[in-house]
Length: 81
Image (tube, rainbow, N blue to C red; front, side):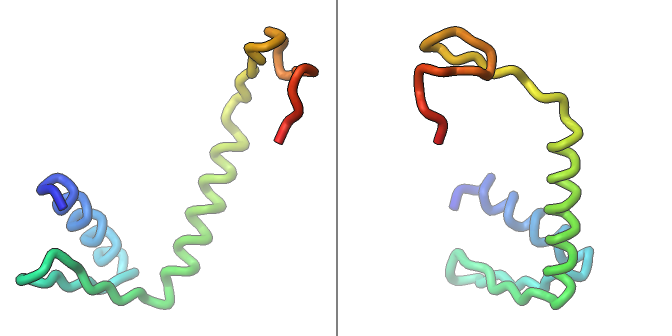
């Protein structure tokens, strides 16, 4: 890991630990962390996923333009997947 990546992981785990969601221990001889996850993590994750979904739904929708037919959100030249 780069120093920036290591710092990011340390900060992420610190935030999770401060919320009581994980206990993390860093190996000193190897570049790895041991992470124990609390039972509360599942509830926390589900709440965050729901909040993200609501935020996405409240965002104004952007119109998509098909570059084949240059129509807004109503492309008939290619099939949607």
